[in-house]
Length: 127
Image: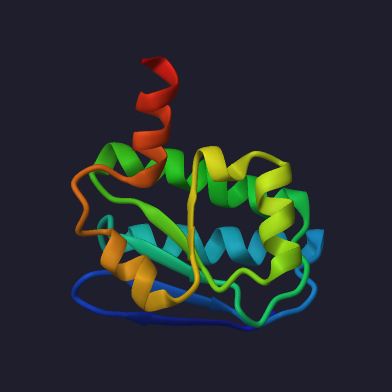
């Protein structure tokens, strides 16, 4: 599996290019995410625009990574989900814990918000 990584001042971008992302690729995704922590916590954008199918194990790895990253004051966002991936993302309720954007630029811009959309949704549910 090829994972293109680039780092800017504001975030680390992981561009996943393998399609479909199968369970055997899940470990590679996990290693790439873990590697972003080696240089200190950073906001992460995972670009899935070249992917048509993601297995549940990989979705779980991404969600667990968010739980590891957020206590450090950083977050992970998804970008470029096609309609099928977006449907899966919402069906398995990941949209309750992760944010998804059409483009990397939109995902990057969302890091400037003091309260994320996921946090807003959770706060609204508890009111």
